[in-house]
Length: 470
Ligand SMILES: [Zn+2]
Image (cartoon, rainbow, N blue to C red):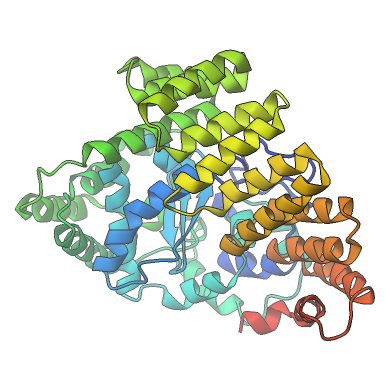
């Protein structure tokens, strides 16, 4: 299930149009916004999906390791935007769904990740990245896409961050303001060289990176209606592409292609994004090349679920499961379909299977399981739901949906302070500190002073974003 956090509707499938306001924001606004942006109040186009997050993490892990960067605990943040963008703050890798769906091979995305890792290893824009790392994910996304603009304009809490913003805006021109992490030409050359080093160390080709950058560089791209933020933050003059091409061709791995299993996962990811974000025509376009491939049949099952007959979708999904019984995401799809036709008990079984098969240990699958158990609604299943949802947020602290479900299930079980605390956590992790404090104080009134939940509530009450961002 591909979903994004939403205030009142459960899992969202139709993400609709996204803001295309990337362009005009400066970074100072970005981090300042973190004090008051609320995902409860605003539709923030972050996309959550266990399968895609795991795949992108698998792309990044070897590269990060080769670059001497943290090789685990990378948060993958999928931004629902059709343009091409990707950047790493250190702790988090932000990538647009548009970039993922455009790339025909894993190698194209891996190359971009390698280049970004090169910027990190080179210490480029380090100060800025540190500040972004401390900001809440939702606040960064809101700002990236323009949703945070009004909020940022209204707040005066931007001291100490303005300096970072000025670094980006120093060019003065509109172009400099268009991107959150903009690099110098010399930095680009360094990052390209580092990228090739990491790709060589992991036995991978630089061809995909060259293809992606070449596309940005081409006149065709310049003439296009869509402005890719990535192209603006990473200057790509002809000579840079020529130098990169020489490096790529020197590599002993220039002709190495992605392993077939990885390419298959990539194809399944692309068709999933098409099915959930772009509609049936986009799915048909991707299926055309090879209508009987596993990815095409996955896309077909998903669009049958989304736009057609759930019964037929179940049959198609069963065939997928038969072919890859250990694929957790086929089980997840089965669970989603069963939820849609109001069979929460069967859905819970499917999600439980997905959880047990998931090597990436995604918190999202646990939350789906918890949600299904909630829908079953017996006292026993509600208690199980609490356990699964808590396990889910244990793996995935910024999942504000999960806190909302937790609050609901605690409410149904009559545990009011726990419900208030879960609501406080949900607001806290989406950057809405004001409401977080209100609910934390409400929870404290019914808790014993000093007990663990009281202490956690106190942490939320004491939290001040300005201290955090210094
Ligand atoms: Zn760059």
